[in-house]
Amino acid sequence: MFLDLQVGNLTEPLAGRRWDRQAIMGQIYQRIAYYRSQGMTNFDPVFVHYRNNLEFFADLMAIWSLGGCVIPIDSRLTKFEVETFDFHKVLK
Image (cartoon, rainbow, N blue to C red; front, side):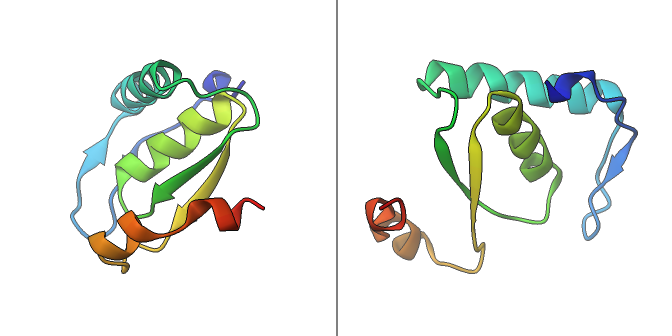
């Protein structure tokens, strides 16, 4: 689906890290394999601890290409808050 896009280079705003098209596609394919191995199916909601980085972009593209729905979680939440959050209430 999204993997036919002709993406350009990406640069992380704060750190200045840069991925070229080959690196981007490699990261997306790795994530697709991971999400598939976790049993992700079409229309599954996927909570992603959002950070302003290149990996977040790759996660978005991978989840969307598998037909999933990304639900970003604010990166300012602590590890405890994320681990104890009742995600089932959100999905009702």
